[in-house]
Structures are given as C-alpha cells and as structure tokens.
Amino acid sequence: MDGSRTNARQMTFAEKFRSRKVQRYLVIVTFMFVPLLLLLVFTYVPFAKMVQFSFYDMKYIGAKTYVGLKNYIDVFKRSDIFGSLFVSVYYMGGAVLQLALALFFATMMVFKVKGESVFKAAMFFPYLVCGIAVGFIFKFFYARGFVLDTILQALGMDIDNIPLWLQNQKINNFSLVATSVWRYTGQNMVLFLGAMMSVDTDLYEAASLDGANKWHQFRYIIMPSIKSIIVLNLVLSISGSLSAFEPPYVITNGQMGTGTYFVIMNRLAHENQRVGLACAMAIVLLVIIIICTVAQKLFFKYAFNDGTEDESKAAVRRKKREAKKKGGA
Amino acid sequence: MTAKMKAGSIIFSILKYLSLILASLIAIIPVVVCVLTAFKTNDEYAASSVLDLPKSFANFENFSIAIEKANMLRGFLNTGIVLVVVLIVSVLTGSMLAYVLNRFKFPGRGAVESLFLFASLLPGIAMQVTIYQIMYSLNLINHLYGYMIVLMGTDIISIYIFLQFFENLSVSLDESAIMDGCTYFGVFFKILFPLLKPAIVTSLVLKGVSVYNEYYASSLYLTKPELKTISTALYTFTGPYGNQYNYICAGVLITIIPILIFFLVFQKQVYSGMAAGAVKG
Image 1 (cartoon, rainbow over the protein chains, first blue to last red):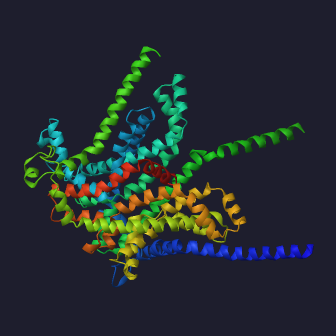
Image 2: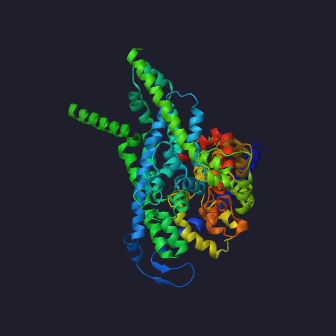
C-alpha cells in the first residue's frame, strides 16, 4: 500500500513536470513573440536596409545604382553635411554649459531653499513642452522687434545695436543652442538633484558643524555622489547634439548655416530623396554613437574603477602574503 | 559661529535666491509672453508692445481660431487614441518580455537581451529613413494603426524599466505561487503584474510624454489632414499664419496646457520617472 502511494505521487510529479515544461515553453514564446517581431521589423530590418542602401544611389521608388563608398565620401565632402557636423559643435558647447548650469542649480537646491518645489517646477517645465512648440515660442522670441528685442530695449539698448538673432550668421547658432539649453537644463538639474538627494542629508549638517564650508561640502560630499551621472550626460550630449532637430527645423528650417545633422538628413532623405546618402549619414552617426558608448564604458571602467579597485588590491595583498610565506620558508 | 562665517552665509543665501529667481524667470518668460500675446486681438497685436498686457484675459477668439485653422480638436482626438493604445500595449509587452528575460533561462536569452541593448543605440530620426520604406511596403502609411505600430516597435525605454524592476523583485514570490499550483501565466498576471505598479507608472510617464510630444514619425506617416496628431497640427502654423503670432501663441498654449496640468498633478511621479529613466542612460 505504501509503495503504490509513492508511485502515484511520482506519477503526478512527472506529469506536473512535463506540463511545467510545456508551459514554460509556451510562456517564453508567447511573451516574446510580439516585442521580438516588432524589434525585427522596425529595428533590424531597417538597420540592414540602411547598411545596404548606403552603397547605392537611389530614391524610395525606382532604380538603384551601386556606387560603392561614394555616399560615405560625400558625407565628408559635401559642404552642407560637413557644415552640419560643425554646427553640432555649438550644440556640444551648449550641452556643457547646460550641464554646468544644471549642476550649479542642483547644488543650490541641496542647501535648504524655501519654495524649492516652485523653482524646480518652473525650471523643469520647459522639458515637457513639445519640440514644435519650443520652436514657435523661440521663433517669436527672437524675431525682429519682438520679445527679446523689446526686453533689451526696455533695459536701455538701442534697436540698431541689437543684432538679428536668427539671420546674423555669426550668432544665429548661439541663439538656437540657447533654446536647447533652455529646454534641457531643468531636466538635467532634476537628474542631478535626484542623485545628490541619495546622499544622507545628515551628512551636510554634520559637515557644516565640523566647519566645512559650502565649497568643501560640494567638493567632498556632492561631487562623488554624482560624478558618474555627469560623465554619462557628457557622453550623451555628444549624440544629443548631433540629434538636435525640432527647434532648428521650425525656427530657421536649417537656413543661414543653422542646419543640424538631422535637419540636413531629413532634407536629403524626404525632400531631395537622396536615400542612399541619407543612409550613409545615419551609419556615420551610428559609428560616432558607438565610439562614444565604448569610450564611456572604458572611462567608467578605468577612471572610476567601478568597484574593481578593492578586488585588485586584495589580489595584490594576497600575492604579497604568498611572497612573504615563500620568503619565510 | 563667527561673525565672518555668518556674513558669508548671508551672502551665500542672497546669491542662492537671486540665481534661482533669475533662472526661473528665464525659464518662464518665453511662455508668459506667449500667454500675453495669445489674448490680444489682431489690432492690439499690431499696435502694442509684446510685453504689454492684453486688454482682456477673456478674449478667447485666438484660441478658437487656432483650434479651427489647425484642426486641433481632431489632433487631440488622434493623439488621445494613439496614447491609450500605445501605452497599454507598451506596458503589457514590456513587462511580459522583462518577465521572460528575467525569470527564465533558455538558449538565446543573452542574444535577445543584446539585440534590445544594441537597438537602444540606433539614432531615432536616422532610422526613419529606412523605416519609411518598410512602412510603405507594408501599406501602413496614413493609417492611425500604422503610426501606433511604429511607436510600439521603437520602444526600448519601458523594457529597460521593467527589466530593472524585476531584478529587485524576489523570485520566492514566483516559487511559492508555483508551489500552490499557479501556472506561469497566473504567476505573471495575478502575482507579479500588480507588484509592478511603480515601474508601470514610470514607464507610463516617460512613454506618455514622448508620445504626446512626438512629431517626426507623425509628420512622415500621417500626412492626411484628418489624421494629424497634436504636434503636426501645431506645425501647420508655419504656413499661411507665419507671422500672426497671436494665433500661433494660442495654438502653442493649447498644446502645452494638457501636459502642464498632467505635470502639476503628477509632479512627484514625473520627477522619479526621470530619475529612473536616466539610470540606464
């Protein structure tokens, strides 16, 4: 009787196991099917096509001609595309300024501020405004005789001394970069503030009781807690500055030397239908992004040690100990 | 505290508040000027300085003109439909995929994870050059569902957020449920899914903001006037009304107001969503 009972139990267990296995398989397949299909159709097929098209002279419809590396050479030879790489340098400069400002204001807010939530909300809100609206807001802001000119005149400047913010090729890129600083500073600040707040706030009080001034608190308590997020943002700002699109698209449509990489790419791909050339541009951008990502990973690995420092130290100590033992014996 | 230190901390306080007030002003002035302009009649707009207050804040004429000219109500309807469908599907597919990738070991799991990881590096607008061709051959252009499918297909953020969240969700929950005879589907839908609430909120916030503000794909794949979303509807102001900023400002405000209300109500979730989305970079 005892034996049959264990037998029955084993049977059900085997059955259960078998059905578990089938179930497992079902779950894996059904849960992954949709996302994987979408990933394939909208990421990897287009990616493969992009690589393929970049070697052709072609439009969306019609004949293709194989041109080898000509499109890639054109990316660096055509003045409009190469110029747009130069324009993105302005945006990188803007990104550095924006990170510095964000860091400054986040630090100000870590030290107790009355009405913190109001300041934070006011500065963060531009991030939520859609790119097209940002474009219109600043087209209006910079237009001759409108917002900025009026403010400057109210402050006593003469209209003749005020430059044309969007037409003057010496400054129009600065004007456009300012819109992206306006848009993203608050968001960066919120990120930094989040990282800073993860430090125990008692630490600040203890430090100030010990006579540490604000600079010391910044240098020794705040900085270490956010250095990785700063580096991450610096790296992201490189691909971000190549990806600037909506505000220059609405405000100047890339005229007068303000065409960013994406504005030019959009024009080539969808207005001039130079699909092959646009694909080559995309691949060049991807290579830049990959280089940045790898550089960032390496930087984290070697500059911040990523927690491996202690292990390597332990290994060194172990070796020394072994050497000592050998020496003793 | 010595007198010198006290003086120093007072100066610091003054600088702190001055800089914060200045920055907040710079952040809101461009929008405030838009508010002033949106309430001005055509005559007022032509005659007054942009910084002058409008005669009346009850003049909603520009708003109704903007809504009518740019067909913004239709834009809101389309954006609303897209938002609901895309958010629901993204949360479901993202959390289900994360569940499988986090809880099961199977051949090819690492490969799938790397495929998603690499996809996040591909630059968005650049990809549309060839996605456009695929949309064309699948006959998905100028259909609202085609646009929705693109937005779901290029969604990597929510997958990351769910993957991260599963890391910190104890496996013992699954195990005890399975002991009780629960199926894997049951474990996911009955036990785990309700626990994902914080991750769901985060991904709704991030994805919601990006879908509401999305312009580029919408401009490519929804070109018929009746299919315009709110941001492409707003873009129509670049045409014939290029210099009638009292209309444009009204249009801008109409697109901003819903997201402003959303932000004021869900401030905390928006901030924490930002932080969570930033971790992976």
